[in-house]
Amino acid sequence: MGTRSVNLERWARVPGFPLYEVSTLGRMRTYQTQGWFDRPKAKPRLMKLLNAHPYRSTVLSNNCVKRRSFRIHELVLMAFVGPKPKGWEASHLNGNCIDNRLLNLRWESRSANFARKKEHGTNLDGEHHHNARLSNRDIKRIRAFRGVTQIKIAKHFGISQAHVSAIKNHLKWKHIP
Image (cartoon, rainbow, N blue to C red; front, side):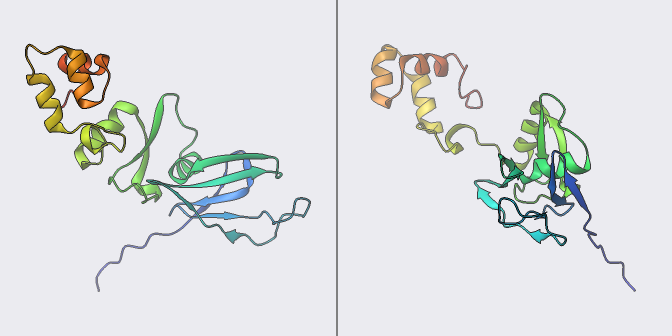
């Protein structure tokens, strides 16, 4: 007989929000009722998660007064690993930002998390960033301009002169040679 890998789901209270639980599989449930002054339910109900691109999130409340939005991967780590160390962030080990299983998560420094994103190809820098106005080709053209003022280059590409200067001095878009 072959062995079978089974992900056993465990539940833990969300720190600071006693009516909510998160599981090792990244699911949420609540004992909270819909009414303001109702008693907590004896049996929890599963919660629908929000898709706050690209991460899954939820809004938790304490006694229907204090409301706060959380990303699910942070709640999983807070409940099963402990509080977030100062200056650290939640990291998805496999690069899949909707895989919120405990075995796929860890607290890491920003630089370690960024290095992991580069490994996966999930980092959003350069032309892959959702706010990027320039392409990699544009950056190479800006750096190749000689004898043209930075102000003229900026007007041509619809960016500021300071941005052109930062590109030419390799302070921005460092990943482009």
